[in-house]
Amino acid sequence: MKIVAATLLALSISLVQSMPASGQDFKKQEAQIAEYKKWLDSLGPKGSQFWIRLDGQHRPHRLYLGEGFYRADFQSQERFVDTFSNYLAGHPQKFMLIDLFDASTNKPVGEFGWGGFKLYSQPVRTSTRPN
Image (cartoon, rainbow, N blue to C red; front, top):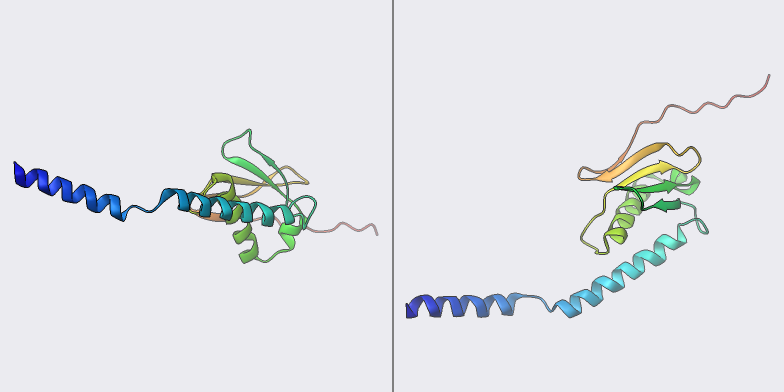
């Protein structure tokens, strides 16, 4: 019985010592989320127009994308959506599911979920010019 008690005591002490200081971690996470917000605001409706609005009424959230998003390369688009997902989750290492919609047509254009970032294939847009 003494051996079991000593083992449990040693195990509990080692677990407590290996746990990170949660107060410090929380402040780091909070600072990181604040940086995400600042960056996302620069890309928002009053910035580069990567996104126009967010609809949090639905699950997953609906993020309406603007022209800035479509002009960006794929890596920039993915980084933006990934960061937005972290921001919505409120944690730099967690993610929120997001459905991506075109702000001008209100049609779905992609998603961010368990499978990562995905843009749906879009029909080729052709301009119709009068003859």
